[in-house]
Amino acid sequence: METIICDRSAFLYWRTPPIAHLLASGREDDSLLRNLLSAADLARLRANLRAASLLFDRAYGPGGSRAHYGPAGQRLGGSTALLSTEFGGPVDVLSTLPRDRRPSAIIRPRVWSEALPAGAMCHVDEGVAVFSPVLAVQQLAVRTNPVRVALLLSELMGTFSVYQPPGPLAAALQGLADADRLPAYCGWRAARDNDGGLTGLWSRPPLLDAAALRAHLAHAPSRGRSCLAKASLLARVGAASPFEVQAGMLLAEVPAHGGEGYGELMHNRRVQLSVDARRVCRQGACYCDLFWECGERGVDVECQSASHHFGAKSSARDADRATALQMMGIEVIQLTYAQMADASRFEVFSRFLAEKIGAEYREKSERERRAQRELRAKVLVSWESLPNV
Image 1 (spheres, rainbow, N blue to C red):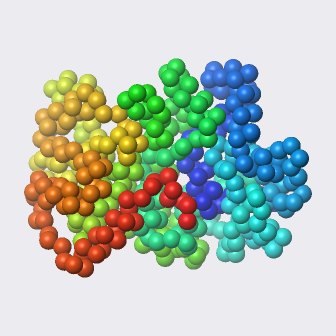
Image 2 (cartoon, helix red, strand yellow; image 1 turned 90 degrees about the vertical axis):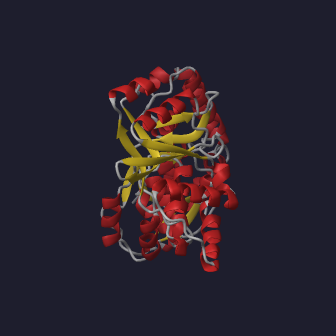
């Protein structure tokens, strides 16, 4: 019998960079871990994480007793190091037996009586498993709307994760970054701002693709499936940041649903550069945030805003990239978060974009403006809080 982490807690688990799990609970003799921190520094970090963990303090710290938390809570006792990377508690766990349905300070039972599909979970520790990312989102879909679920799916199907570590781990990661010793681990890379600070944005390979989502929907349990299916039609594939997802949804969705109707956009379209363009930006290819194919040319909307792009660097390198893309016949337009967040400024931007991509700007009816307000209210939200439903 295993304790199965599910729902919101499972989504937070998949948001967490593998390097955070390595630092918090990896084998002490791991070769990479030994190169990153001394034995004393590692012991200090883990002690500080335990001290900062509400989960550890409430049940497994000095004076804590596992007996009050049932079998599921007792099995989590051996995984406090793993869970200290994110979970403050209570942890969402799958509940199928009446004895496991009693909530506590560390356990939030999530009743699930339907059969689990193949590949529903992954074993992460002794006696502990976690739901797959898509099944975790399906559980969240039971309690929220398709737009919010589409944002969650867009993170899974994108190349980014948003992760804010607890204090001791944040300090350790920043220390490694300051010393240029924070590795790209399992394909995950931390984004840094212009001052070198870690931003909370991590780039990584996608955790879910369109084919896997379709396969899941074909055999998914019934609870939350309808909402998940609707969300799958709205989700943006291949985005590299929350800002790109939000902009893509507002620009691509049809006016009847609150968008601008410029639906033929692609996220992070790769452009192979000519010899001269390579000389300008010193790289072989560029990626366009939001790209429209327009005959023999293209239009690239670059999402530029440090505070809402999680501190993505903006520098002379961005200007070099823009010049290189212009040399390839691609017009580059800048969109800031402030422009997107202000409805009147975004309308001006939309008119300008329509002209550039050869689309006709549509004046919105009152019903469409109402849909627009509703969509903006659902899309322009705190990204970190998306799973909190």
